[in-house]
Image 1: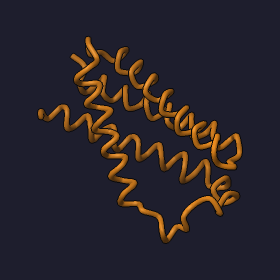
Image 2: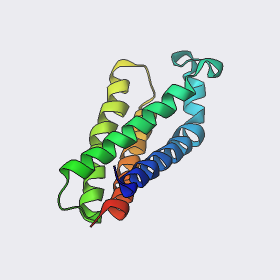
Image 3: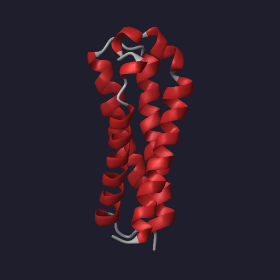
Image 4: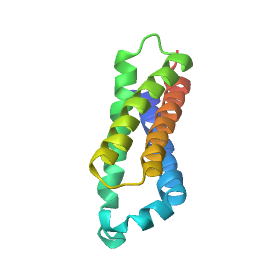
Amino acid sequence: MNTRFLLACFAVFVLWMGVDFLFHGVLLVDSYQQTAALWRPEEEAKIGLYTLVVLGSAIIFSTIYAFLVSPRSIRNAVLFGALFGTAGGLSFGYGMYAFMPLPHDMAITWFCSVLVEGVLGGLALGFILGN
């Protein structure tokens, strides 16, 4: 494993944690309060597990790009991130909306957050791992 790959994984992880904080910790606070019965109480939240999930996802995202995207370029990395984010956002945002009584704006915001994460993660990969 080379240093640039590890740096890319770390950059994606940090970006995704930041975007998650912005969307979930700032923009969606009121929506989460309005749907509090659907979520674990804050004192029961599994933040350590969540952090590991984001880290693992960042590593997998970076690995897929490093092994399967060629040629490596900022354009291809952003396109990869946008496609990854669209697929993940649909699955997360609208997959949850299909089965839980969530406000529609929450589903849209979840979709957008995953799309933004994908694009920013792709941009980071393009800068760090691009040829």
